[in-house]
Image 1 (cartoon, rainbow, N blue to C red):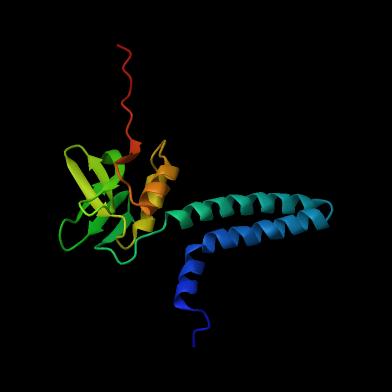
Image 2: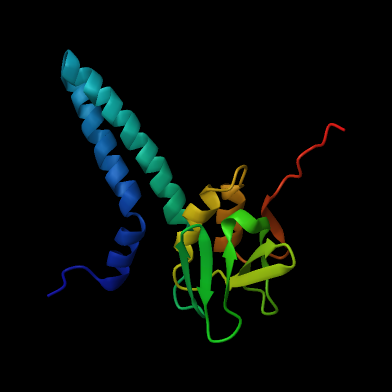
Length: 171
């Protein structure tokens, strides 16, 4: 017997990390404000860790999408794999030169992972696109706020999330 509606359960699962971070931060604040000595300092440390977990959980919850779209995304061993009836493929995170989100022909957001001579296009509504958060976090200088805004809305132009910088040669 389910006591929680499926929509409510889905929202709780989406925000689970943020809720856990809030609970840890509140416990840490309770210890910090209501105790003395070592427990007070442990409470301050716990409140800071909870705040970091809360911030990370909010970012992940805002990034999540990917339900009901065409195909399945998985990230394993620094490789992004997109399995679909038509147009699937894979991209190595180490070989990427550019990551962007742009509209497709119907105006829906599509991830584009560009390597030298290759492009992997993944609909933002594909199942498992929340795994892309960790893959993107491995790239130095990635603009996560732009990724969150572009993947949750309907972009009218291409938004560059990350681009590989060319090393400057001295001679």
